[in-house]
Length: 189
Image 1: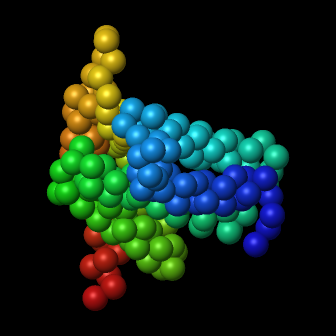
Image 2 (image 1 turned 180 degrees about the horizontal axis):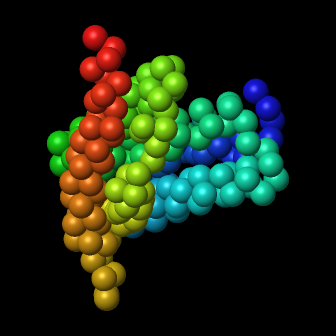
Image 3 (image 1 turned 30 degrees about the vertical axis):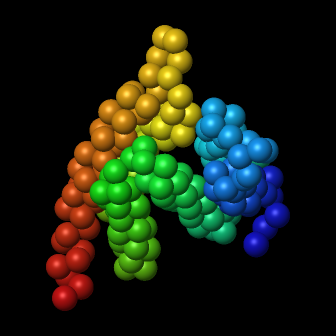
């Protein structure tokens, strides 16, 4: 396991997850209401920014590694899953939305692993729809975490629309990846 700057950022993102979840379990005398939402939102945004930064630094510093390529998406999926589960618990996202998004991530991760084993990883490379899904999801989640209305903007309403869009794109991208993998899946029988 190489201790490169990108990998250390990815480990940092993983270590932010218990801090992120813990914000919602702090004694309300320490952190409550709006401040709780704000701190959780900021932690999530920092995690999202380190995701971008570790990829950028891996390319610029030429510190890409097989371990980093494995760990980075795991960190992303853990943070998104933690956020969605917390949002379900807070009553800000329907459980079916979280189930679809988390279920798709598990399914496509397993599919990519299997496709890589049989030498067909390019068949399930990241698609444009997948990128739009991720963008929609990564904009929606901080809005849903922040939750509190602003005088000129309602993050909960916009975040809800975006998470539903992300859910539709999640289903669409999963169907796309399964379609691309189908010829290889049929050969496996």
